[in-house]
Image (cartoon, rainbow, N blue to C red; front, side, top):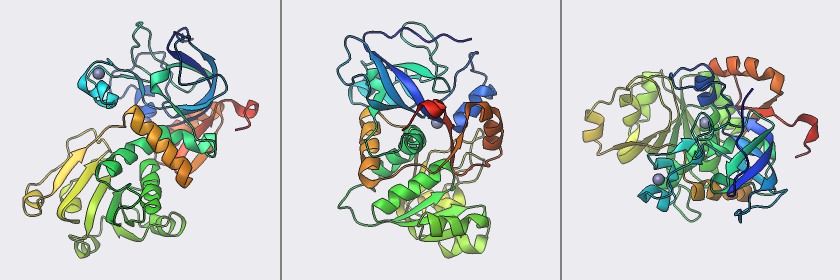
Length: 335
Ligand SMILES: [Zn+2]
Ligand SMILES: [Zn+2]
């Protein structure tokens, strides 16, 4: 049994329709990081309908189609909160396994209903399917921010050579964003079996098998930007060599051991390595609106709540194309 807090003055209650399954959920369920507070209700890729609003809620009304991502609360007073970079507030609390202002433990979207502060809720555009939109709330925003940061999502921007390491939940969304803005996209992967899928179905322009040194060497200094979505340990050196002079490698995958970062490819190519974690709330709404405009959503595999344990096991084996989404409301939803 678990408790969900009462709907406060700034809160909305949401009937959860769909919830994507992120790797972070798996880590919490298994207590891999030693921080899980049981009973834990995971899930931070949530779409649903508002069923109740608190008296100070101005952004939403009952019946609105909304989404909730990783963030549940932040201090509201620091420089990051004040500039809508709440994701970098040092008192940030997450959608599940976090501690809300009233001291209650936050509960995520693997649940028929949830309560969220209106400041951390976004609107889902009318034309987006609620199921395939759900993973955008974590996977989508995680790749949107690095690309926006490197000015790759500007309607009148010049086409760039974009590399994406790893073609999973994050990588395949990154391909869609990059192609929507006219970039030349190269998938860099350890599995040659993904080449056909990457090119034919997702529209990638090129493919490099990263375990083949001759392919890696042939593509030296060809890319403007590389997004690294891989959460397994790897050395950054060979990927840095793919970048042009002054290119940027942006990390969003999080291996649990430190990665090798050789200095030569940085120095000889004046290259940058940086990282980022999810996005602020204004950016998250911006990303959802952009997905509506360009009709971008996630490729999903739907599971029912009784299949969650099997799906978690398959997630652990990377056996999913590209995101599991739980049909929380089942037949009671038509969206
Ligand atoms: Zn996530
Ligand atoms: Zn703050």
